[in-house]
Amino acid sequence: MELLAVKFLDRAKIFIKAGDGGDGCLSFRREKFIEYGGPDGGDGGRGGDVYLEGTNRLNTLIDYRYQQHFKSRRGENGGSSNRYGANGSDLVLKIPVGTEVLDETENITLADIVEDGQRVLIAQGGIGGRGNNKFKSSVNQTPRRADKGAIGEEFWIWLQLKMIADVGLVGLPNAGKSTFLSLTTRAKPKIADYPFTTLIPQLGVVYVDANEFVLADIPGLIEGAHRGRGLGDSFLAHLERCRALIHMIDVTQDNIFQAYTTIRQELIMYQRDLEHKPEIIALNKADSLDSSEAEKLKEKFERKFGRKVHLISAFQRDNRIASLLRKALKIKSCLSGDNDIP
Image: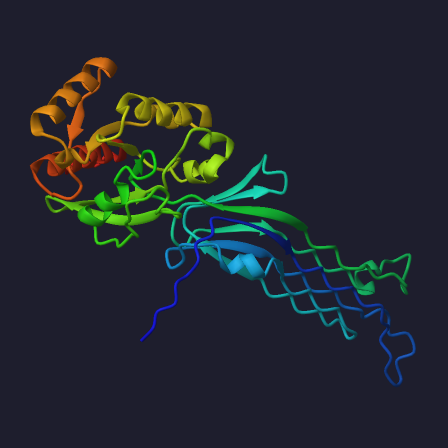
């Protein structure tokens, strides 16, 4: 059986319209032998609301790429004999967990969907208009007034998906992040020996000593990513929810120090507190160098930046990778307040 690939989309702009309220009815009771029956117009029904609901069954916003207008049902009009109009049915839009909802200007956050089943009222339906029966009084026994239903809320919103992962993989293109993800999880990302092989974020679950955490492979960043170069700003957004970062550096490139500072500078310039997240530094592809040469580079890096470094090879799941994963798990568990993990 052939499987169709689902295109990843992490941003979408949609128009939502809550239902208008039904109109009130202008009516008078007319029956045989009852000369002055009085008003009997019923109220209109309330317009349907629009809700957004998070679900773990979706991991892309592609459903909102080609259909951008969504409208809930209008309330029915009131009727004679004091019959009330039915309320319009609500509209519930399913979106992936991790989606942030912004107004049209992208300056105001309307909602943040972070849990499966979380439901947020995003647009309220209009109330139904009053029938003329509601205007009857001792002064006016035959009111000839009935209200129109109120207009439901309508506006454009932005949906921005930010993947929910415990640990994010960052680094320059072709640093070996996808290989690392495929080795430590059951994820099957595309792997090749050229830059920008990974074009969309990938998720995988890492199992360590009977515990687990979610690892995200973020497409390679380049200088100027915080300004959108190479779609970097959208990729950086996926790191905001990560508890920790694994910064992977290709040990075979000409200047590993410049590679590290380039990514650190992009995290700082993005200005979303990414620079303050716990960071694990991994010098990857150590198997490509002589062991003594690799150790010298590691020591030189640690002296220059004053940070502990893990020397690993993404092709070999050995004790060095296991040590790195345990450290990531420890950071994740400490930040989440899980005291059961040593």
